[in-house]
Length: 626
Image (tube, rainbow, N blue to C red; front, side, top):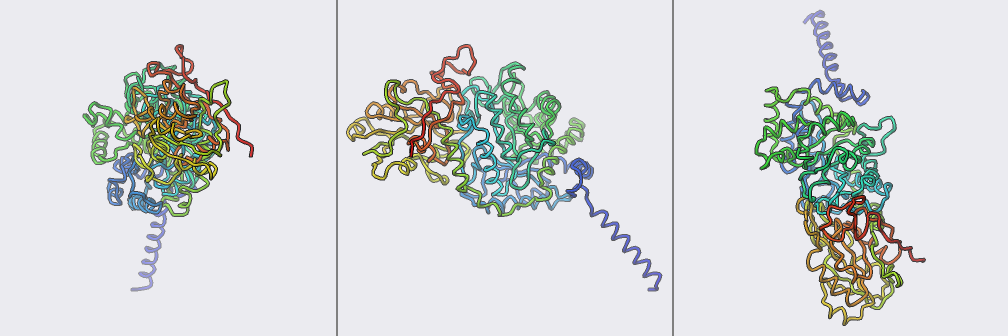
Protein backbone atom coordinates (compact mmCIF):
# COMPACT_ATOMS: atom_id res chain seq x y z
CA UNK A 1 0.00 0.00 0.00
CA UNK A 2 1.47 3.36 -1.07
CA UNK A 3 1.85 6.48 1.03
CA UNK A 4 -1.16 8.14 -0.67
CA UNK A 5 -3.34 5.12 0.03
CA UNK A 6 -2.34 5.09 3.69
CA UNK A 7 -3.08 8.80 3.89
CA UNK A 8 -6.50 8.25 2.32
CA UNK A 9 -7.29 5.42 4.77
CA UNK A 10 -6.22 7.64 7.66
CA UNK A 11 -8.44 10.46 6.50
CA UNK A 12 -11.38 8.08 6.11
CA UNK A 13 -10.82 6.61 9.58
CA UNK A 14 -10.61 10.12 11.05
CA UNK A 15 -13.85 11.13 9.33
CA UNK A 16 -15.60 7.99 10.58
CA UNK A 17 -14.35 8.61 14.10
CA UNK A 18 -15.49 12.23 14.15
CA UNK A 19 -18.84 11.20 12.67
CA UNK A 20 -19.28 8.56 15.37
CA UNK A 21 -18.26 11.03 18.04
CA UNK A 22 -20.94 13.42 16.79
CA UNK A 23 -23.53 10.63 16.80
CA UNK A 24 -22.57 9.61 20.31
CA UNK A 25 -23.38 13.05 21.65
CA UNK A 26 -27.05 12.85 22.61
CA UNK A 27 -28.47 16.16 23.73
CA UNK A 28 -31.15 14.52 25.89
CA UNK A 29 -28.46 12.79 27.92
CA UNK A 30 -26.63 16.05 28.64
CA UNK A 31 -27.72 17.44 32.05
CA UNK A 32 -26.25 20.83 31.09
CA UNK A 33 -28.88 21.27 28.41
CA UNK A 34 -32.14 23.07 29.25
CA UNK A 35 -35.01 20.81 30.24
CA UNK A 36 -37.11 21.75 27.21
CA UNK A 37 -34.24 21.05 24.82
CA UNK A 38 -33.67 17.61 26.32
CA UNK A 39 -37.35 16.73 26.04
CA UNK A 40 -37.56 17.91 22.41
CA UNK A 41 -34.40 16.06 21.44
CA UNK A 42 -35.56 12.78 22.94
CA UNK A 43 -39.11 13.13 21.60
CA UNK A 44 -37.69 13.66 18.13
CA UNK A 45 -35.89 10.31 18.32
CA UNK A 46 -38.80 8.23 19.64
CA UNK A 47 -41.01 5.88 17.65
CA UNK A 48 -44.72 5.44 18.36
CA UNK A 49 -43.90 2.13 20.03
CA UNK A 50 -41.42 3.78 22.37
CA UNK A 51 -43.86 6.56 23.23
CA UNK A 52 -46.68 4.17 24.09
CA UNK A 53 -44.25 2.15 26.19
CA UNK A 54 -43.61 5.28 28.26
CA UNK A 55 -47.36 5.61 28.89
CA UNK A 56 -47.59 2.08 30.30
CA UNK A 57 -47.27 1.13 33.97
CA UNK A 58 -47.23 -2.54 35.03
CA UNK A 59 -47.11 -4.37 38.36
CA UNK A 60 -43.82 -5.80 39.54
CA UNK A 61 -45.35 -9.31 39.53
CA UNK A 62 -45.42 -9.32 35.71
CA UNK A 63 -42.30 -7.21 35.15
CA UNK A 64 -38.85 -8.53 34.27
CA UNK A 65 -35.63 -7.32 32.65
CA UNK A 66 -36.84 -8.85 29.39
CA UNK A 67 -40.35 -7.36 29.52
CA UNK A 68 -38.98 -3.89 30.26
CA UNK A 69 -36.65 -4.12 27.26
CA UNK A 70 -39.10 -5.70 24.82
CA UNK A 71 -42.00 -3.33 25.45
CA UNK A 72 -39.96 -0.29 26.53
CA UNK A 73 -42.19 0.02 29.61
CA UNK A 74 -42.17 3.46 31.20
CA UNK A 75 -43.11 2.55 34.77
CA UNK A 76 -43.51 -0.29 37.25
CA UNK A 77 -45.47 -0.29 40.50
CA UNK A 78 -46.03 -2.32 43.61
CA UNK A 79 -49.73 -2.65 44.30
CA UNK A 80 -50.78 -3.09 47.93
CA UNK A 81 -48.86 -6.08 49.29
CA UNK A 82 -46.94 -6.64 46.03
CA UNK A 83 -43.43 -7.33 47.32
CA UNK A 84 -40.35 -9.19 46.03
CA UNK A 85 -40.44 -11.55 49.04
CA UNK A 86 -42.11 -11.75 52.43
CA UNK A 87 -40.23 -9.57 54.92
CA UNK A 88 -37.89 -8.51 52.11
CA UNK A 89 -34.81 -6.52 53.08
CA UNK A 90 -34.02 -3.12 51.54
CA UNK A 91 -31.26 -4.80 49.54
CA UNK A 92 -33.78 -7.26 48.05
CA UNK A 93 -36.00 -4.37 46.99
CA UNK A 94 -33.04 -2.49 45.48
CA UNK A 95 -31.88 -5.52 43.50
CA UNK A 96 -35.37 -6.03 42.08
CA UNK A 97 -35.83 -2.38 41.09
CA UNK A 98 -32.37 -2.21 39.56
CA UNK A 99 -32.96 -5.37 37.54
CA UNK A 100 -36.05 -3.83 35.98
CA UNK A 101 -34.16 -0.58 35.45
CA UNK A 102 -31.30 -2.31 33.66
CA UNK A 103 -33.86 -3.73 31.25
CA UNK A 104 -35.06 -0.20 30.50
CA UNK A 105 -31.53 1.16 30.14
CA UNK A 106 -30.71 -1.58 27.61
CA UNK A 107 -33.32 -0.30 25.16
CA UNK A 108 -32.35 1.71 22.06
CA UNK A 109 -32.76 5.08 23.76
CA UNK A 110 -32.05 3.98 27.34
CA UNK A 111 -35.01 5.83 28.87
CA UNK A 112 -35.17 4.94 32.60
CA UNK A 113 -38.39 3.61 34.06
CA UNK A 114 -39.94 5.14 37.17
CA UNK A 115 -40.95 2.76 40.00
CA UNK A 116 -43.97 3.76 42.09
CA UNK A 117 -45.46 2.48 45.35
CA UNK A 118 -48.24 3.32 47.79
CA UNK A 119 -46.49 4.95 50.73
CA UNK A 120 -49.58 6.44 52.35
CA UNK A 121 -48.54 6.36 56.03
CA UNK A 122 -44.85 5.74 55.80
CA UNK A 123 -43.35 3.10 53.52
CA UNK A 124 -46.23 0.85 54.46
CA UNK A 125 -45.63 -2.14 52.15
CA UNK A 126 -42.17 -2.76 53.55
CA UNK A 127 -41.16 -4.89 56.53
CA UNK A 128 -39.69 -2.90 59.44
CA UNK A 129 -40.52 0.48 57.91
CA UNK A 130 -41.80 3.21 60.22
CA UNK A 131 -45.61 3.26 60.05
CA UNK A 132 -46.95 6.75 60.78
CA UNK A 133 -50.52 7.56 61.81
CA UNK A 134 -53.00 7.53 58.94
CA UNK A 135 -54.06 10.90 57.54
CA UNK A 136 -57.20 11.21 59.65
CA UNK A 137 -54.94 11.32 62.71
CA UNK A 138 -52.45 13.71 61.11
CA UNK A 139 -55.32 16.07 60.39
CA UNK A 140 -56.08 16.11 64.11
CA UNK A 141 -52.57 17.42 64.83
CA UNK A 142 -53.21 20.64 62.84
CA UNK A 143 -49.42 20.69 62.41
CA UNK A 144 -48.25 21.16 58.79
CA UNK A 145 -44.58 21.33 59.82
CA UNK A 146 -44.87 17.93 61.48
CA UNK A 147 -46.52 16.52 58.36
CA UNK A 148 -43.71 17.95 56.21
CA UNK A 149 -41.16 16.15 58.41
CA UNK A 150 -43.15 12.93 58.00
CA UNK A 151 -42.97 13.43 54.23
CA UNK A 152 -39.20 13.85 54.38
CA UNK A 153 -38.80 10.75 56.56
CA UNK A 154 -41.05 8.72 54.26
CA UNK A 155 -39.02 9.84 51.24
CA UNK A 156 -35.81 8.59 52.87
CA UNK A 157 -37.35 5.22 53.74
CA UNK A 158 -38.76 4.80 50.24
CA UNK A 159 -35.41 5.71 48.67
CA UNK A 160 -33.79 3.24 51.07
CA UNK A 161 -35.46 0.51 49.00
CA UNK A 162 -34.47 2.00 45.64
CA UNK A 163 -37.87 3.52 44.82
CA UNK A 164 -38.23 7.15 43.58
CA UNK A 165 -42.03 7.63 43.32
CA UNK A 166 -44.93 7.41 45.78
CA UNK A 167 -48.69 7.44 45.26
CA UNK A 168 -49.23 9.96 48.05
CA UNK A 169 -50.64 12.15 49.46
CA UNK A 170 -54.35 11.45 49.34
CA UNK A 171 -55.94 14.92 49.46
CA UNK A 172 -59.52 13.69 49.44
CA UNK A 173 -62.01 15.68 51.50
CA UNK A 174 -64.06 12.93 53.14
CA UNK A 175 -67.59 14.22 53.62
CA UNK A 176 -69.13 10.96 54.83
CA UNK A 177 -67.38 8.60 57.29
CA UNK A 178 -69.21 5.64 55.79
CA UNK A 179 -66.58 5.79 53.02
CA UNK A 180 -63.95 3.06 53.37
CA UNK A 181 -61.14 5.48 52.53
CA UNK A 182 -62.06 8.14 55.07
CA UNK A 183 -58.92 7.40 57.12
CA UNK A 184 -56.87 8.43 54.07
CA UNK A 185 -58.42 11.91 54.23
CA UNK A 186 -56.95 14.59 56.49
CA UNK A 187 -60.31 16.20 57.20
CA UNK A 188 -63.84 17.04 56.11
CA UNK A 189 -62.62 20.67 56.04
CA UNK A 190 -60.86 21.61 52.78
CA UNK A 191 -58.81 24.28 54.58
CA UNK A 192 -57.21 21.63 56.80
CA UNK A 193 -56.53 19.46 53.74
CA UNK A 194 -54.86 22.43 52.07
CA UNK A 195 -52.58 22.93 55.07
CA UNK A 196 -51.58 19.28 55.04
CA UNK A 197 -50.35 19.45 51.44
CA UNK A 198 -47.13 20.52 53.23
CA UNK A 199 -46.31 16.80 53.11
CA UNK A 200 -45.53 17.28 49.39
CA UNK A 201 -42.69 19.64 50.30
CA UNK A 202 -41.38 16.94 52.63
CA UNK A 203 -41.62 14.18 50.03
CA UNK A 204 -40.27 16.16 47.07
CA UNK A 205 -38.28 18.95 48.72
CA UNK A 206 -39.01 22.65 49.09
CA UNK A 207 -39.63 24.12 45.65
CA UNK A 208 -37.58 27.20 44.70
CA UNK A 209 -39.69 30.33 44.16
CA UNK A 210 -38.65 30.54 40.50
CA UNK A 211 -40.09 27.05 39.95
CA UNK A 212 -43.45 27.47 41.71
CA UNK A 213 -46.13 25.45 39.97
CA UNK A 214 -43.76 23.19 38.01
CA UNK A 215 -42.97 19.55 38.85
CA UNK A 216 -40.07 19.53 41.29
CA UNK A 217 -38.08 16.76 43.01
CA UNK A 218 -34.93 17.78 44.87
CA UNK A 219 -32.50 14.97 44.24
CA UNK A 220 -31.75 11.43 45.36
CA UNK A 221 -33.12 11.72 48.90
CA UNK A 222 -36.54 12.86 47.72
CA UNK A 223 -39.32 11.18 45.77
CA UNK A 224 -41.91 12.23 43.21
CA UNK A 225 -45.31 12.63 44.89
CA UNK A 226 -48.84 12.09 43.62
CA UNK A 227 -51.87 14.15 44.65
CA UNK A 228 -54.93 11.90 44.54
CA UNK A 229 -57.71 11.17 43.65
CA UNK A 230 -58.79 13.85 41.20
CA UNK A 231 -61.44 14.92 42.03
CA UNK A 232 -64.38 14.55 44.44
CA UNK A 233 -63.50 11.04 45.64
CA UNK A 234 -64.51 11.94 49.21
CA UNK A 235 -67.97 13.18 48.33
CA UNK A 236 -69.74 10.12 46.94
CA UNK A 237 -73.35 9.35 47.81
CA UNK A 238 -73.54 7.53 51.17
CA UNK A 239 -69.76 7.28 51.11
CA UNK A 240 -69.86 4.38 48.66
CA UNK A 241 -66.36 3.87 47.26
CA UNK A 242 -65.82 4.62 43.56
CA UNK A 243 -69.39 5.92 43.34
CA UNK A 244 -70.99 9.17 42.22
CA UNK A 245 -70.35 12.60 43.76
CA UNK A 246 -73.43 14.75 43.26
CA UNK A 247 -72.46 18.39 43.74
CA UNK A 248 -72.63 21.60 41.73
CA UNK A 249 -69.61 23.33 40.15
CA UNK A 250 -69.25 25.78 43.03
CA UNK A 251 -69.32 22.95 45.57
CA UNK A 252 -66.72 20.96 43.63
CA UNK A 253 -64.39 23.96 43.47
CA UNK A 254 -64.86 25.08 47.06
CA UNK A 255 -64.78 21.68 48.81
CA UNK A 256 -62.91 19.11 46.71
CA UNK A 257 -60.58 21.16 44.52
CA UNK A 258 -58.62 23.48 46.88
CA UNK A 259 -56.02 20.86 47.85
CA UNK A 260 -55.01 20.58 44.20
CA UNK A 261 -54.30 24.32 43.98
CA UNK A 262 -51.79 24.02 46.82
CA UNK A 263 -50.33 20.77 45.51
CA UNK A 264 -49.61 22.24 42.10
CA UNK A 265 -48.01 25.37 43.61
CA UNK A 266 -45.80 23.06 45.70
CA UNK A 267 -44.64 21.36 42.50
CA UNK A 268 -46.39 18.01 42.84
CA UNK A 269 -45.02 15.78 40.08
CA UNK A 270 -48.11 13.70 39.34
CA UNK A 271 -51.87 13.61 39.87
CA UNK A 272 -53.92 10.40 40.06
CA UNK A 273 -57.47 10.32 38.69
CA UNK A 274 -60.33 9.04 40.85
CA UNK A 275 -62.42 5.94 40.15
CA UNK A 276 -65.47 7.98 41.16
CA UNK A 277 -67.83 10.01 39.00
CA UNK A 278 -68.91 13.64 39.16
CA UNK A 279 -72.62 14.06 38.47
CA UNK A 280 -72.65 10.77 36.59
CA UNK A 281 -69.49 11.25 34.50
CA UNK A 282 -66.58 8.95 35.31
CA UNK A 283 -63.52 10.97 36.26
CA UNK A 284 -61.36 8.70 34.08
CA UNK A 285 -63.51 9.91 31.15
CA UNK A 286 -63.84 13.56 32.16
CA UNK A 287 -61.88 15.58 29.60
CA UNK A 288 -63.37 18.86 30.83
CA UNK A 289 -61.86 18.39 34.29
CA UNK A 290 -58.65 16.45 33.55
CA UNK A 291 -57.55 18.40 30.48
CA UNK A 292 -59.71 21.52 30.50
CA UNK A 293 -59.36 22.39 34.18
CA UNK A 294 -56.34 20.56 35.65
CA UNK A 295 -53.97 20.86 32.70
CA UNK A 296 -55.18 23.97 30.90
CA UNK A 297 -56.66 26.20 33.60
CA UNK A 298 -54.51 25.20 36.57
CA UNK A 299 -51.51 24.75 34.25
CA UNK A 300 -50.44 21.47 35.83
CA UNK A 301 -47.24 20.41 34.04
CA UNK A 302 -46.57 17.00 35.55
CA UNK A 303 -48.21 13.79 34.37
CA UNK A 304 -51.68 12.47 35.09
CA UNK A 305 -51.86 8.79 36.04
CA UNK A 306 -54.85 6.47 36.17
CA UNK A 307 -55.75 4.45 39.23
CA UNK A 308 -55.25 0.67 39.33
CA UNK A 309 -57.09 -0.72 36.28
CA UNK A 310 -58.83 2.65 36.24
CA UNK A 311 -59.73 2.67 32.55
CA UNK A 312 -61.08 -0.89 32.81
CA UNK A 313 -63.58 0.29 35.43
CA UNK A 314 -65.06 2.93 33.17
CA UNK A 315 -67.49 0.28 31.93
CA UNK A 316 -69.90 -2.01 33.76
CA UNK A 317 -68.84 -4.73 34.00
CA UNK A 318 -65.19 -3.74 34.08
CA UNK A 319 -63.21 -4.33 30.88
CA UNK A 320 -66.42 -4.84 28.89
CA UNK A 321 -65.36 -2.51 26.05
CA UNK A 322 -61.63 -2.05 26.34
CA UNK A 323 -61.10 -0.15 23.08
CA UNK A 324 -63.68 2.40 24.28
CA UNK A 325 -61.94 2.60 27.67
CA UNK A 326 -58.54 3.24 26.06
CA UNK A 327 -59.89 5.85 23.67
CA UNK A 328 -61.92 7.68 26.32
CA UNK A 329 -59.25 7.60 29.03
CA UNK A 330 -56.45 8.85 26.76
CA UNK A 331 -58.72 11.46 25.20
CA UNK A 332 -59.68 12.67 28.69
CA UNK A 333 -56.04 13.53 29.31
CA UNK A 334 -54.62 10.59 31.28
CA UNK A 335 -50.92 10.31 30.46
CA UNK A 336 -49.78 7.12 32.19
CA UNK A 337 -52.12 4.14 32.44
CA UNK A 338 -51.90 1.70 35.32
CA UNK A 339 -52.44 -1.62 33.54
CA UNK A 340 -50.95 -3.95 36.14
CA UNK A 341 -51.42 -7.25 34.33
CA UNK A 342 -52.53 -6.69 30.70
CA UNK A 343 -49.90 -4.42 29.19
CA UNK A 344 -49.84 -6.17 25.80
CA UNK A 345 -53.58 -5.67 25.32
CA UNK A 346 -53.27 -2.01 26.26
CA UNK A 347 -50.23 -1.38 24.06
CA UNK A 348 -51.80 -3.15 21.06
CA UNK A 349 -55.11 -1.36 21.57
CA UNK A 350 -53.61 2.12 21.92
CA UNK A 351 -51.27 1.56 18.96
CA UNK A 352 -54.18 0.53 16.76
CA UNK A 353 -56.25 3.56 17.77
CA UNK A 354 -53.40 5.95 17.00
CA UNK A 355 -52.74 4.33 13.62
CA UNK A 356 -56.44 4.55 12.76
CA UNK A 357 -56.46 8.24 13.68
CA UNK A 358 -58.92 7.74 16.54
CA UNK A 359 -56.39 9.18 18.98
CA UNK A 360 -54.29 12.02 17.55
CA UNK A 361 -50.51 11.93 17.76
CA UNK A 362 -50.66 15.30 19.54
CA UNK A 363 -52.33 13.61 22.52
CA UNK A 364 -49.62 10.94 22.67
CA UNK A 365 -46.92 13.60 22.47
CA UNK A 366 -48.51 15.62 25.28
CA UNK A 367 -48.54 12.53 27.52
CA UNK A 368 -44.95 11.53 26.79
CA UNK A 369 -43.60 15.07 27.17
CA UNK A 370 -45.13 15.23 30.63
CA UNK A 371 -43.72 11.85 31.66
CA UNK A 372 -40.26 12.76 30.38
CA UNK A 373 -40.42 16.18 32.09
CA UNK A 374 -40.83 14.47 35.47
CA UNK A 375 -38.14 11.88 34.77
CA UNK A 376 -35.64 14.52 33.63
CA UNK A 377 -36.44 16.93 36.42
CA UNK A 378 -36.00 14.37 39.18
CA UNK A 379 -32.62 13.26 37.83
CA UNK A 380 -33.57 9.75 36.73
CA UNK A 381 -31.46 9.99 33.57
CA UNK A 382 -28.35 10.90 35.58
CA UNK A 383 -29.02 8.49 38.48
CA UNK A 384 -31.22 5.66 37.22
CA UNK A 385 -29.83 2.92 39.48
CA UNK A 386 -30.25 2.76 43.24
CA UNK A 387 -27.50 1.95 45.72
CA UNK A 388 -27.48 0.86 49.35
CA UNK A 389 -26.34 4.18 50.84
CA UNK A 390 -29.70 4.86 52.51
CA UNK A 391 -30.66 1.38 53.76
CA UNK A 392 -30.08 2.41 57.38
CA UNK A 393 -32.89 4.97 57.02
CA UNK A 394 -35.57 2.26 56.92
CA UNK A 395 -37.29 2.19 60.31
CA UNK A 396 -34.59 4.37 61.84
CA UNK A 397 -34.89 5.42 65.48
CA UNK A 398 -35.12 9.06 64.42
CA UNK A 399 -38.13 8.28 62.23
CA UNK A 400 -39.77 6.20 64.95
CA UNK A 401 -39.41 9.11 67.36
CA UNK A 402 -41.05 11.35 64.79
CA UNK A 403 -43.92 8.89 64.41
CA UNK A 404 -44.26 8.72 68.19
CA UNK A 405 -44.53 12.52 68.29
CA UNK A 406 -47.19 12.37 65.59
CA UNK A 407 -49.17 9.82 67.64
CA UNK A 408 -49.03 12.07 70.71
CA UNK A 409 -50.25 15.10 68.78
CA UNK A 410 -53.00 13.17 66.96
CA UNK A 411 -54.79 11.90 70.07
CA UNK A 412 -58.09 13.65 70.71
CA UNK A 413 -59.48 13.67 74.26
CA UNK A 414 -63.28 13.54 73.98
CA UNK A 415 -64.21 12.99 77.64
CA UNK A 416 -62.26 13.38 80.86
CA UNK A 417 -64.51 12.64 83.82
CA UNK A 418 -67.73 14.41 84.72
CA UNK A 419 -67.58 18.18 85.05
CA UNK A 420 -68.03 18.10 88.84
CA UNK A 421 -65.33 15.48 89.37
CA UNK A 422 -61.55 15.69 89.15
CA UNK A 423 -60.28 14.77 85.65
CA UNK A 424 -59.41 11.11 85.07
CA UNK A 425 -56.49 11.81 82.77
CA UNK A 426 -53.57 11.83 83.04
CA UNK A 427 -53.47 8.47 84.79
CA UNK A 428 -51.13 7.79 87.71
CA UNK A 429 -48.15 5.60 86.88
CA UNK A 430 -48.06 4.27 90.43
CA UNK A 431 -50.95 1.95 91.25
CA UNK A 432 -51.40 -1.40 92.91
CA UNK A 433 -53.04 -3.18 89.98
CA UNK A 434 -54.48 -2.01 86.68
CA UNK A 435 -56.45 -3.74 83.95
CA UNK A 436 -55.75 -3.43 80.23
CA UNK A 437 -58.54 -4.90 78.11
CA UNK A 438 -59.81 -4.93 74.56
CA UNK A 439 -59.12 -6.53 71.18
CA UNK A 440 -56.85 -3.67 70.08
CA UNK A 441 -54.61 -3.36 73.16
CA UNK A 442 -52.07 -5.92 72.01
CA UNK A 443 -52.50 -6.05 68.24
CA UNK A 444 -50.02 -4.16 66.11
CA UNK A 445 -51.90 -4.92 62.91
CA UNK A 446 -55.12 -3.45 64.27
CA UNK A 447 -53.44 -0.24 65.42
CA UNK A 448 -51.79 0.23 62.01
CA UNK A 449 -54.96 -0.40 59.98
CA UNK A 450 -55.28 -0.97 56.24
CA UNK A 451 -52.47 -0.33 53.77
CA UNK A 452 -49.96 -1.95 56.13
CA UNK A 453 -47.81 -4.78 54.70
CA UNK A 454 -50.93 -6.03 52.91
CA UNK A 455 -53.48 -3.91 51.06
CA UNK A 456 -56.28 -4.70 53.53
CA UNK A 457 -53.97 -4.75 56.54
CA UNK A 458 -53.41 -7.61 58.96
CA UNK A 459 -54.08 -8.78 62.50
CA UNK A 460 -51.46 -9.75 65.04
CA UNK A 461 -47.96 -8.76 66.11
CA UNK A 462 -45.78 -10.54 63.57
CA UNK A 463 -46.39 -8.35 60.53
CA UNK A 464 -43.63 -5.81 61.21
CA UNK A 465 -41.63 -4.12 63.97
CA UNK A 466 -43.40 -1.83 66.40
CA UNK A 467 -44.80 -1.27 69.90
CA UNK A 468 -48.33 -2.25 70.86
CA UNK A 469 -50.32 -0.08 73.24
CA UNK A 470 -50.16 -2.81 75.91
CA UNK A 471 -46.37 -2.95 75.65
CA UNK A 472 -46.26 0.85 75.79
CA UNK A 473 -48.34 0.88 78.99
CA UNK A 474 -46.05 -1.69 80.59
CA UNK A 475 -43.05 0.40 79.54
CA UNK A 476 -44.52 3.51 81.15
CA UNK A 477 -46.05 2.58 84.51
CA UNK A 478 -44.06 2.23 87.69
CA UNK A 479 -42.22 -1.11 87.88
CA UNK A 480 -44.25 -2.02 90.98
CA UNK A 481 -47.59 -1.48 89.23
CA UNK A 482 -49.14 -4.83 88.29
CA UNK A 483 -50.54 -4.76 84.74
CA UNK A 484 -53.18 -7.42 84.04
CA UNK A 485 -54.20 -7.96 80.41
CA UNK A 486 -57.50 -9.66 79.66
CA UNK A 487 -58.78 -9.17 76.14
CA UNK A 488 -62.51 -9.56 76.84
CA UNK A 489 -63.13 -9.94 80.58
CA UNK A 490 -66.57 -10.47 82.06
CA UNK A 491 -67.93 -8.14 84.73
CA UNK A 492 -67.36 -10.64 87.53
CA UNK A 493 -63.65 -10.85 86.73
CA UNK A 494 -63.36 -7.08 86.74
CA UNK A 495 -65.25 -6.58 90.00
CA UNK A 496 -63.39 -9.33 91.86
CA UNK A 497 -59.86 -8.06 91.13
CA UNK A 498 -59.90 -4.66 92.83
CA UNK A 499 -58.27 -2.82 89.95
CA UNK A 500 -57.30 0.80 90.55
CA UNK A 501 -58.43 1.63 87.03
CA UNK A 502 -58.79 0.08 83.57
CA UNK A 503 -57.72 1.02 80.04
CA UNK A 504 -59.98 -0.44 77.34
CA UNK A 505 -58.64 -0.39 73.77
CA UNK A 506 -61.18 -1.37 71.11
CA UNK A 507 -62.09 -0.32 67.59
CA UNK A 508 -62.35 -1.22 63.94
CA UNK A 509 -60.61 -4.11 62.22
CA UNK A 510 -58.27 -3.22 59.34
CA UNK A 511 -59.72 -2.48 55.91
CA UNK A 512 -58.98 -0.52 52.74
CA UNK A 513 -61.09 1.01 50.00
CA UNK A 514 -64.41 -0.75 49.29
CA UNK A 515 -63.63 -3.30 52.00
CA UNK A 516 -64.13 -0.51 54.53
CA UNK A 517 -67.43 0.89 53.29
CA UNK A 518 -69.88 0.68 56.18
CA UNK A 519 -73.48 1.77 56.57
CA UNK A 520 -73.62 1.17 60.34
CA UNK A 521 -70.16 2.28 61.63
CA UNK A 522 -70.46 0.13 64.74
CA UNK A 523 -67.51 -1.11 66.79
CA UNK A 524 -67.10 -4.81 65.95
CA UNK A 525 -67.95 -7.48 68.52
CA UNK A 526 -66.84 -7.94 71.26
CA UNK A 527 -65.76 -4.29 71.60
CA UNK A 528 -69.06 -2.93 73.00
CA UNK A 529 -69.28 -5.86 75.46
CA UNK A 530 -65.76 -5.18 76.66
CA UNK A 531 -66.58 -1.52 77.25
CA UNK A 532 -69.74 -2.40 79.18
CA UNK A 533 -68.23 -5.19 81.27
CA UNK A 534 -65.25 -3.10 82.31
CA UNK A 535 -66.71 0.37 82.65
CA UNK A 536 -69.67 -0.60 84.85
CA UNK A 537 -67.24 -2.16 87.31
CA UNK A 538 -64.19 0.09 87.58
CA UNK A 539 -62.95 3.56 86.62
CA UNK A 540 -62.16 3.23 82.94
CA UNK A 541 -60.47 5.04 80.08
CA UNK A 542 -61.62 3.91 76.62
CA UNK A 543 -59.24 4.30 73.69
CA UNK A 544 -60.87 3.98 70.26
CA UNK A 545 -58.70 2.70 67.40
CA UNK A 546 -60.51 3.59 64.19
CA UNK A 547 -60.16 5.23 60.82
CA UNK A 548 -63.16 7.49 61.43
CA UNK A 549 -65.81 8.35 64.00
CA UNK A 550 -67.84 5.31 65.04
CA UNK A 551 -70.99 4.76 67.08
CA UNK A 552 -70.12 5.46 70.73
CA UNK A 553 -73.06 7.43 72.11
CA UNK A 554 -74.75 4.36 73.70
CA UNK A 555 -71.62 3.67 75.79
CA UNK A 556 -70.45 7.21 76.48
CA UNK A 557 -72.15 7.60 79.85
CA UNK A 558 -70.45 4.50 81.26
CA UNK A 559 -66.98 5.72 80.26
CA UNK A 560 -64.98 7.88 82.63
CA UNK A 561 -62.68 9.08 79.85
CA UNK A 562 -62.63 8.65 76.08
CA UNK A 563 -59.74 9.05 73.65
CA UNK A 564 -59.85 8.93 69.84
CA UNK A 565 -56.50 7.45 68.81
CA UNK A 566 -57.36 6.88 65.12
CA UNK A 567 -54.91 4.46 63.45
CA UNK A 568 -51.65 5.37 65.18
CA UNK A 569 -49.26 3.00 63.37
CA UNK A 570 -46.27 1.18 64.81
CA UNK A 571 -45.35 3.62 67.56
CA UNK A 572 -47.90 2.80 70.25
CA UNK A 573 -45.62 4.33 72.86
CA UNK A 574 -47.03 7.71 71.82
CA UNK A 575 -50.42 6.69 73.23
CA UNK A 576 -48.97 5.87 76.64
CA UNK A 577 -46.90 9.07 76.62
CA UNK A 578 -50.12 11.09 76.77
CA UNK A 579 -52.34 8.75 78.83
CA UNK A 580 -49.85 8.94 81.69
CA UNK A 581 -49.10 12.66 81.42
CA UNK A 582 -45.57 12.80 80.03
CA UNK A 583 -47.20 15.00 77.40
CA UNK A 584 -50.56 16.75 77.34
CA UNK A 585 -53.53 16.08 75.06
CA UNK A 586 -53.64 18.62 72.23
CA UNK A 587 -55.37 17.02 69.22
CA UNK A 588 -58.54 18.49 67.69
CA UNK A 589 -61.15 16.54 65.72
CA UNK A 590 -60.49 16.72 61.99
CA UNK A 591 -63.93 15.22 61.49
CA UNK A 592 -67.37 15.72 62.99
CA UNK A 593 -68.28 12.93 65.43
CA UNK A 594 -71.92 12.04 64.81
CA UNK A 595 -74.51 10.80 67.29
CA UNK A 596 -76.19 8.28 64.96
CA UNK A 597 -75.54 7.22 61.37
CA UNK A 598 -79.01 8.49 60.46
CA UNK A 599 -77.51 12.00 60.61
CA UNK A 600 -75.01 11.26 57.84
CA UNK A 601 -73.71 12.94 55.83
CA UNK A 602 -73.21 15.75 58.35
CA UNK A 603 -70.37 18.24 58.14
CA UNK A 604 -69.57 21.50 59.89
CA UNK A 605 -71.73 24.27 58.52
CA UNK A 606 -74.64 22.04 57.51
CA UNK A 607 -78.12 23.33 58.51
CA UNK A 608 -78.87 20.11 60.44
CA UNK A 609 -75.53 20.10 62.28
CA UNK A 610 -76.09 18.39 65.65
CA UNK A 611 -72.99 16.37 66.45
CA UNK A 612 -71.93 14.38 69.46
CA UNK A 613 -68.60 16.22 69.18
CA UNK A 614 -68.10 19.00 66.60
CA UNK A 615 -65.26 19.47 64.15
CA UNK A 616 -62.36 21.02 66.09
CA UNK A 617 -63.39 19.60 69.47
CA UNK A 618 -60.68 18.29 71.77
CA UNK A 619 -60.11 18.63 75.49
CA UNK A 620 -56.61 19.45 76.68
CA UNK A 621 -54.46 18.38 79.60
CA UNK A 622 -51.14 19.66 80.84
CA UNK A 623 -48.16 17.36 81.17
CA UNK A 624 -47.23 16.23 84.66
CA UNK A 625 -44.40 18.16 86.24
CA UNK A 626 -41.31 16.02 86.53
